[in-house]
Length: 70
Image (cartoon, rainbow, N blue to C red; front, side):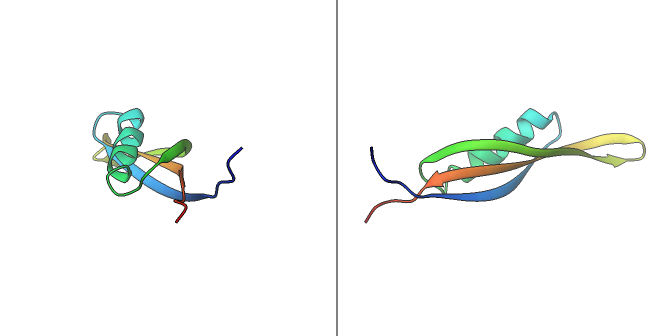
C-alpha cells in the first residue's frame, strides 16, 4: 500500500438555487486549482434572506486532497 498524506481545507460554496448546487460550485471551483481531490464532507448549510425571501444557499464543506510526492 502506498503511504500518502492528505491536506484538509474548508470551503463555502454559494448558489441561488440549492444547497447541492452550492456544494457542487465549491468543489468544481476548487478542482481548478487543487489536484487530486478525494473527499468532500458537508459541514453545514445556511441561507441568506433578504426581505423575507431566500436569495442564496450556502454550503460549507471540508475537502481533502492528496499531496504530490516529489
